[in-house]
Length: 609
Image (cartoon, rainbow, N blue to C red; front, side):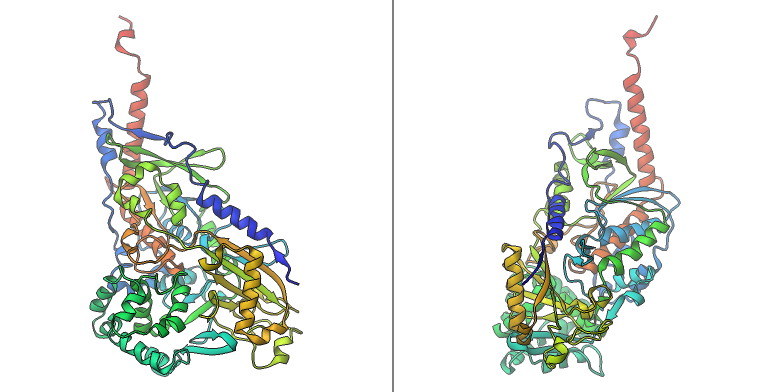
């Protein structure tokens, strides 16, 4: 008998849909809290000039520039940059508001606090982490909104974890092998374990994989042999430029153009595509897929997998929160942003943000700079309509998101142990720290509706192993299953687990949970890269962060980390000087004061003679 836990699901679903619907909606589309400088006031030319001083929406800081371009993939200094923090401490202290306490927002707060600024954060949910959130239900079960795996090329995120002291303690490295589980318990693999590193280790992994038939291996080799990856081995810039030019076609289109077979896509590449972006090869950008393969081909460590010893909250977020608390960063939970208060010029174009209104009472908070560190649905709801006059903001509305459902299933034995039935059934004694039976690694499958999954009681036993209990399978269903009820999804997950691991039919599911996200990662379909905004915007003191913003990585934890570092660098580069962010705030305050004085002055005809 399966016992369903639905309270946590209902909680996070309601919170998430608040985030993506009502939390960022102004109370009135007419009342946008804007101030038009220079209108009907010929004497206010100075104020008009100040407000017209919009930022050039390009990368200004050297730090942000280092995160983009071909060199960023080979830059071994990125980890040390993230680990050591910003090299600059500003002479001007800014008051900065950050909307959203996900990974991007928290990373930005770390750097900006270290640069000497006063930071206040506002998060709509009662916990931090964004799409990497986790929390405990009433029974102490750790609930997640996805399956979080740390690839070896997450250089910036690893630097942040080293900076907070969590890298060595909280990450567990896995065998250098990517395992595919097929119907009937048949295993295939990309085994990168080889005495010689990349690219040789990758070439032999594809040549030896059991996942493909001989004919498909041949066609696979032909296509990869004519790919930008091969050129990149001796001309990285040329190969990477070719990859960038492939954003407008799907991976399937690219792969089948010159020899790639459908069998390779069906039996291997689709699982990888779903794991990267929750869409299949027919609908994922070739640029997205080839960017990852490029890293795998160039860097041996890029394909090495790590997973947290426990939950994201404990292993990733808590160390960051301690770091922020030590630097007096204020974090307001359950505090949705209701409106962005901003100025506009005589043409109605936004020029400068004054602050934000937060909470049920719409309390006004004034800031020198504001960062919107939210996801795609969040930023679409947050932006005032007037901002869409700028193409950079309007392009965001072309980005789409993918719905997912994360399923957790607890069993009374070890699901992935297929060789020893006695060990599969044995849950007695202390089997913590990965001592239980089964496969301690991320798993892929093309024969299930969840492309990637893992037994967290093995891979992340610190908080997911329970004495006297067995596997905790965590699997992510894509949009094919999203519309089904939680009960149906749970049963489908059990049935598909039994199909992949026939021996698991002897086990019982003792607990389950489903978390649905109506809009998770942005959809990495062809043609989307051009719509991703940069971190600095045309509104001089308004900035963006989040894994959807422009950086040379995917919508991922590493992408979020990169964007947080980049937006911090952009603000640090703009903070000081006669036209810096602090100077802009002071001039705006003077202009406001002058207007108020003029408004309260008695008219000339009322002056006593």
